Image (cartoon, rainbow, N blue to C red; front, side):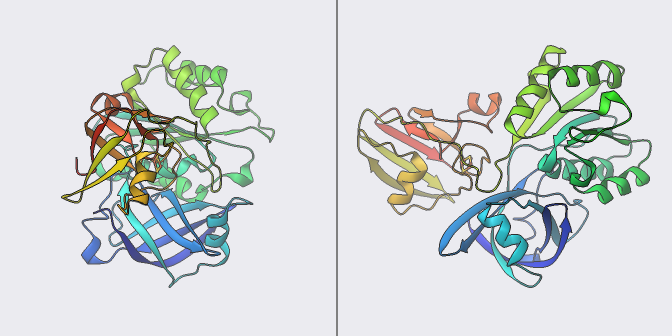
Length: 351
Ligand code: FES
């Protein structure tokens, strides 16, 4: 379940400063790679002698059998994304962890969905739009998509194709921050004022079931705040931050105050190790030192690949950019961000 599998890159396709990989999913892995629209997969690769892990969202339509697409934004200093663009080609293989993530949609008939996406934040949203269109006959999706300029817009052809295919159920509004546009409403970033304007003028008569927000941290904060001040209940607002390849969120210097014994349940087996008082290691790092392999990607509290349930004990999280309130309430934690706060800890990846 939490194992990397070697998948073949069937084909590659260029997008503005990005590349799409189509990965072949063999029949034997079909069940494990069955995903919910909005989820991501994690790659592991040795690049210049260093093991790198990166998560990328699935952007293809669920109806495509035996293959999935991920979009990899290429960043100037991004070690993985540069290699993805320049070193990998069709026929190569890549170690891949099965889909995970909770930024997902469960399409329902007659429901209205709205997404605010910025830049490569379109990727998981694209998977959601495909699913809502394909899996219902009546649900609607409104996309607000922000970029610097037209030439940066990702997945433009796919979006146009969906508009042609579902003209009455899918609509898209493009916003540009560094290129002049004719209508002032479409000029600029998704800041608080812009989102309020959008809510008042474009969504006023729509009973929205769920809002999805994906982009850089500051954009997410602005959109979520504006939606909340427009009266949208928190449970209807879902967001996913992304880290650009190579971008890291610094860890704080929290330490544990007492020795701790940790039990980890994963794939039906229990593993145990100890933590010494004063260590600054997170549960994920300590497990690694103890030789217990756990799933992770960003190690920054963003991707939720390391999400598990705290079955017993207390932990404190350094950063949390991915778990929602209900997950915290049900005891889910990010093992890459959790430091022990009690002498006995039990976490499970099987729940
Ligand atoms: S590894 Fe990404 S949130 Fe922990």
